[in-house]
Image (cartoon, rainbow, N blue to C red):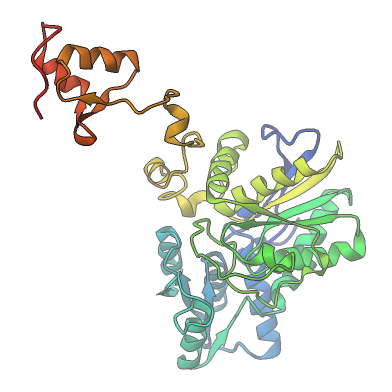
Length: 399
């Protein structure tokens, strides 16, 4: 049995389970539970590798402060390991991120600063630029910078990938994950390129992110910053992204992500965050495009649902944002109206009874009242009935 001396020793070696209730057709869907890491996310691996390498290089010394820009999980991993190793932590997090992440960061002793989520990478208020500024202003600081740090993909090449390979006995046809820094898929892809090059690497990218267009070499548009799923999607291309090992990018929207997140919890009993729903939703879309019965796909579940109680697992929030209930394709008014050769109107001289009968005949509840070619008013059947409770034929309408 492995000698456990610290929480750090519990990072990695997360289990893989086969999905039993989420229908993958004729394919086999396996879920790697990165939410089982001590910090509840896959980013514990990255944080540990970054800090260990920084210590070896002399970039981190006694009394240092670790600074990072994050969607939350890398910051949490760094804050946890900094705490265990005796360093301070300052974290710049996007203002659209869940409050639970902020509370968690503070509970680990990290200093938290909020950055605008609707500004481009060239803005001084962009969270990466803000973190660089904080690092420059902090004595004895170390900027972790997951977006450029080679330790990020290295963590997955050295740990995540060989775990998957060994747990699946080398028999894995596809690996699917979300994309933020790109470190996960880049590191895993590099390992499998050497050890099982037939394994396909698939990314799930949220609508509004630029990653899919970049991979497909399409003209890049500005990100719209509207996606709500946290931890994946980018408005710039980190240098940690290596597309050379990538086979497919699948677009997913927030609704698909959040509904699948709830399904994973309800149907598989695994309590996960929104990027996990994105990865599984992307995997199912991918599996529909391939005709390979028996295909074995591993999906990485990056984090725990405990950070999303006030959003994804909050019925009211889901309803207010339109993420629950059936998707309704709305047509035009003409499609739901009876086929009419001429518009229905009534002259102002029409009796109340005749007006009511006309509306019943055409299954309508309101009708315009006219004087010649001029529309005088729109009258409701209920109004007519209120004025004619007993008599069918009354005086002409007055408007």
